[in-house]
Amino acid sequence: MNLFVCEDPDDQTEGWPAKGGGSMIAPPLFIGRGITKVYASGEVEVRALDGVDLDLYPGELIVLLGASGSGKSTLLNNLGGLDVPTSGTLTYRGRDLTHADEEALTTFRRDSVGFVFQFYNLIPSLTARENVALITEIAPDPMAPEDALRLVDLGDRMDHFPSQMSGGQQQRVAIARAIAKRPEVLLCDEPTGALDVNTGITVLEAIEKVNRDLQTLTVLITHNAVLAEMADRVIHLSDGKISHIARNEQRRPVRSLHW
Image (cartoon, rainbow, N blue to C red):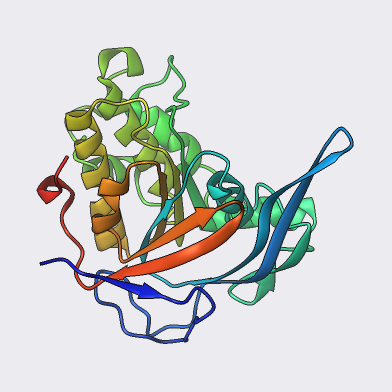
């Protein structure tokens, strides 16, 4: 039986033991304290994040749950260096991301973070192998494009163009492209949002495998509460705040979830 242990979001005890796939022995990769993001909309200020505290550890698989407008994508963008907090602090391996300039953020994104979005953003005129090679050519220590594609079970589709692949296969190419540079962090924003259930399961299994085999900290945004059980921890957001954090005593394989 898969149990949730609800945690106080303010209780970020360093080094608590993982019950799933993540390793909590190492220090956190990310430490966030009081993360706030405010956007101006005319004369109105919108607080997309409102005092978020969190620690994220190497090898964890994190699911972010919450309604539209709860702050999930804003939090993901801050973790990935696509945006920075208005106030509070966010560090990655002790490096301050809150006040980093664009050059430092670009280096952080290029070397440490892989992104997977709802839409695949593949270049139609390039094969799967060539789409992945775009990243490996600029990464400091990449894996071979072929190895990245095999990791997501596309060894037999390397020389196919996007138009010759299903939506799920294209999304797995996008995952291969994201992880080919061996990132410590993989950020996934509704990666199955454009897919049917069966195809989505295949994509989630690829994400699960990458997390397990590469020990990449993986953060997955979803509206689908079913996916909570595949995670080490589930972070629930509401109105820009963490409402609570649940830790699974044991992660469940994606295919065993009740869809």
